[in-house]
Amino acid sequence: MATRVPPDLPAWALLREHYREVSARHLRELFSTDPQRARDLTFEAAGWRVDISKHRITRETIGLLIQLAEESGLVARREAMFRGERINTTEYRPVLHIALRLPRSRSLIVGDQDVVPQVHQVLDRMADFATRVRLGAWKGFTGERIRNVVNIGIGGSDLGPAMVHEALQFYADPNLRVRFVSNVDGSDLTLALRDLDPAATLFVVCSKTFTTLETMTNARSARAWLISKLGSERAIARHFVAVSTNEAAVREFGIAPENMFVFWDWVGGRYSVDSAIGLSVMIAIGPEAFREFLAGFHAMDEHFRSTPLHRNVPVLLGLLGVWYVNFFGCQTWAVVPYDHCLRRLPAYLQQLVMESNGKSVTLQGEAVSYATAPVVWGEPGTNGQHSFFQLLHQGTVLVPCDFIGFCEPQSDLLHHHDLLIANMLAQAEALAFGRSAEEVAARGVAPGLVPHRTFLGNRPSTILMAPKLTPRSLGALIALYEHAVFTQGAIWNINSFDQWGVELGKELAERIAPELCTDQDVQHDASTTQWILYYRERRARERRGEKIPPRAH
Ligand code: F6P
Image (cartoon, rainbow, N blue to C red; front, side, top):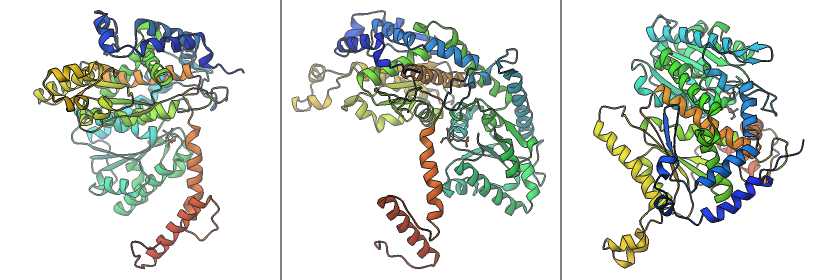
């Protein structure tokens, strides 16, 4: 199959030309010459209001980006996903996270099966289990009710539930403590367990494959901890449940099928928080709120599927990413949620964006000649303002930002919320319009300080606001980003749904692990070999109880 090369598309050439003109213009001018700009470049989707007017674009830019989307076959690819075609071509799988949030009344036939009843069957089982835990009907081995839930997983089996649980804390049962353990560093599990009563602790082991080194290591240590504390292997049945696609491995671990919640290989890890991987979240917020969460996703799915491209918010956000990455040469994108409960959102989006689109070969396997995913990063506002915002305002790199906020506060400290949102709006305004040297001088600033206190502005940002952070608005927000990532993958002609780039490191770690603690021959490059031998010797001496002087090599 011939590779479709995005830079060869007519729209790409037009955008390159257009970039020359637009990049020379300032947002001040774009706003002053177009009084309707803010109104016309603000869109609605699934309860979200999204303002892209502070981007370095004109209406013509949007037209050309949409032409690019059309020439790239975005619509056909989107339809292929919604129909359940095997668009993940390197793993030969459909990509059907959208099925996880379809209402019960709908159907989606994949192969010869309707997947919607399967999805709802699992959701019903999750709801039953979550309700029993929440009501105290599900007892631990010694008859105690469950008061602690420890989710063990990594990547998509951790970041999604951890981020959503944090985001929806105000909806969570305050009598349940939910913790997330992901890192193979034993400190993670140790710190998570050190003040927990094993008799009141439930482990939810989440792993699509049920083979992931970190998760299986943590799960085995948790199992050993539980058995040592409760004195019987039979305790496992009351204290461990699994979420996975791999029933055989779950069984082998010792978790019975009735304590297992399944999902399917057509759900990618980073797209799985709305599957049974969200079980810990459902236990925390309850089945009803979880269904609201799914409804939010679904509302955004419908918007993505049926709204014309020029008003389609995920499409527009995805295209803006292409505009900055491929034409302005931006290599990073900041996400700044002005809601403390969304503080894990940047980490979640890092996996979503960078694992999906951090690719350098096309769907046809040829090297790309253009940039793909940017580095995504961020911190919640207002905290970020006191660390990296200096660079956003006056640094030498252009960093587009997403500012995310809500009209209604979650806490009772209402005046805090006004200050929070004032800061969000102020940052976007300052980035876009800056303060010129003349304006600075006019304020009486000493001439020597004028350059230091000047803000050039013209730095782009999106403002995304919803009435309130609720399960529904959060679901819609996640789906919005999922589809923006999809849009970019379609334009870049890459597979957004595999992640072969994580395999080599995993494989080498498996080889190195035994080399660190045995005398076996070590054959790596000189640097790696040196480190293995250094570590091996230090650990051996520690084990022998020898004192090691700090500078001995
Ligand atoms: O690191 C790669 C990855 O496969 C992610 O895509 C995935 O979310 C994570 O590992 C965890 O995988 P699993 O759910 O199979 O344990």
